[in-house]
Image: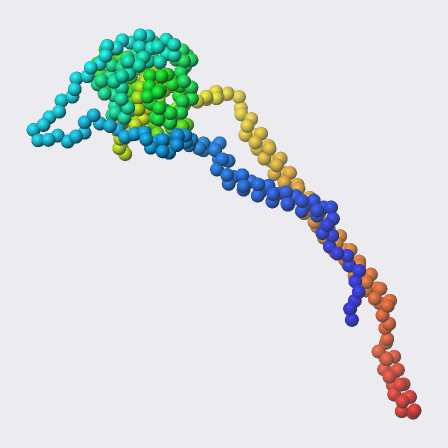
Length: 351
């Protein structure tokens, strides 16, 4: 026998449950959106900036440029043969404004006729122009040089169009990784002290730019490997110079400058007043934790009240159903049932 019931269905779609389900869907959407965002490489560029492309030229155009270091004469000597260097025919070069074009502050072309790219170091034939430019750049103020310099010249342009930029003022921004003092030999310009800076720009990637200058700012670190120092350099592009490294021979742009500008990191002065940052952070964290605990307590208390009310309602409905069932079902006493059966048997026998 099946007992009818009037029990109501679970209230899955009341307002409170709908709000909870909506919040769960919103939280899931935020998680999926965050996963998609952090999965993009561009999301992390604010931490790790990307290495910009070294050149925008077409591949076939870059292949036409020879970046190999060319030695003056690497032919092996025969038996009983010796080699003497040719006497350089340096042009009469004077320092100062006489080698600089007053219109655009570039170096006059005749001064740079003996300069060749991809040669290891500065050759003897180039030394006169080399020291003359260093002397000339020292006679201008840094502001004047920067005013007439070409801004934001890409690294690839210096490597590809070295003939065009030779003798022109360029303004570069980057990080100095090595700063060394050079040993200067005798020269007509009377230069006794030089520094070499190996810097890297955003466009050079892992390829360095060599800067030779007459001085460096006071306090600027020096050494084979220093912490990256932010600098700006304004100087004359001299050539694509060959240099030797542990991995072989390479070429790098050579810039002749007066002095780099060192952008020192800003250090906040220490205050004698007690700091309030830590108490504020602790207070905010305490408020957040308290709010979360309160929210969890409210949700737990609401669930308990809901379960108690639901169980009580089910119990009342069950009692009502049992009472209704008792009213509808006819009960017969067992003794009366047997007496009735006995009477029925007697009547059948007499009949």
